[in-house]
Image 1 (cartoon, rainbow, N blue to C red):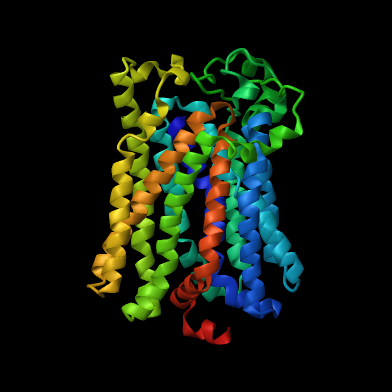
Image 2 (image 1 turned 45 degrees about the vertical axis):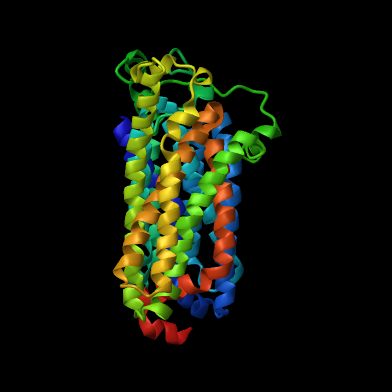
Length: 452
């Protein structure tokens, strides 16, 4: 079940990342279709990014309070409706920017909720085995976003089919989650034993079966794996929630220990993002690459990001096991282990300083290689390892953030998204035009660019 959830969630959270990457090749076509300048279409990118920074903070906190399943399904449904609206919208620029914001609101909180589900079903010592493949699945699928967007737009001479493709992804994710994703929120289902409640938190499969085979469904014990609830009648969430529950992600930033971890999340991601947005300028002005070659140079960084996520997942579990044994605790007994008495920071950040120093040397080496115009293979290789290390550090810090706030794991990860998105926007303001131009050159060619 954990393996299934890993790849289900990895597919679902592509609604957050794929929606952004697949949009870039559409900018010139959208400008022509809506008869507005490129700058106006770029404003839709900014609006999307603002919603991407703020929405997870709200919905992740709601998922912590009222359950992962209903919030996640509601967000996927919102994303699907917004995608359908974008496919049908032909002339209204106001509708375009509004629906893009709704798309962002529906998709961007899904990674935070996925992190919360992982924290619910996987013990501390085994979370890396889920987080690594989960995030790498998302990264690998999202890496092909610009290629898919450009190819569909070129083949159909329009943008409708791109948004319909996103609608299809959302519908598949909604059906899979609706029929198979159990409620895992501990504030709703406790530890999964002797908890009885409403249909709202049950899978659609369990609801449909209960109508026809109610007695058999109530007596089945096969559906209760350890540390995970499947199709079990659940009790409604506790009453007495306050508005403070909806802004937990914002309040987490005010904690000193959390801010230190959040800084690592934001700064390590900033390294990856800076490398990506610098590629068009460097390989155009320094190495004289053409548009197709510039597009291909993006791939090593994306590959490094994917591999870095896999390695991070394995290191998270291995480092925990090593530190646990040094303190006389067997990792297998972690379910009864009190993290307040355990140096979880040391376990997660084991050898972290070495990775930071190596990443620093890679960044310096990259700058040196570009400054002295060494063979382009050198910066490309350095880019691969720098992006891999930045992803490794970011994922490790996110895992620690969830450990520090175990009762609000989705909100904790959402606070990291907020910090990361803020840093991303700072870098984006400086280099956005260069990165968009390179993607457009690569994916749509001179013909479309001449129109813009």
